[in-house]
Image 1 (tube, rainbow, N blue to C red):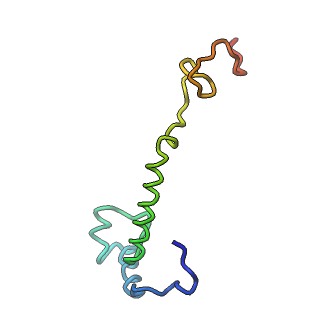
Image 2 (cartoon, rainbow, N blue to C red):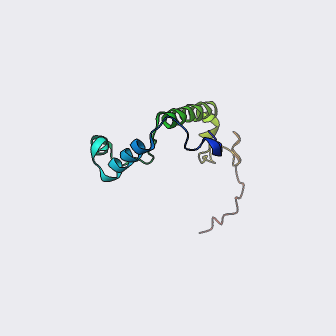
Image 3 (tube, one colour):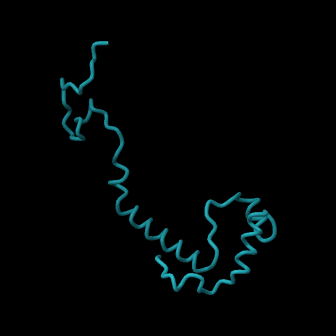
Amino acid sequence: MVQKARDVGVGSGDPARGMSVLVDVVRGEGRAKKTLDRHGWPLWLFLGADAVSDVRARITRVAHVLDQWEDIATNVSFLDEAAVGPSGTDTPVVGVSHGRDDLS
């Protein structure tokens, strides 16, 4: 979600509480200690209900696109040219040189 400059810093979150949570995470104490002990450092730290909601909405949209395109996205493995033609066709090609010297 793109925020306009006038919206930055405007929200329902208390900056002092947010900073307190950040300090707890960095120091590994307070409210963050149990979660850090259990899960380790987060790759990302989202603070505020609006941030969590925005990220969950984005994840949902990405998962939807992934579901729609999974067959195309995962069909990029190397093909066995003995069973499948060199350009991905179902017709094997016999006796075609692929620029390799097989005289070794």
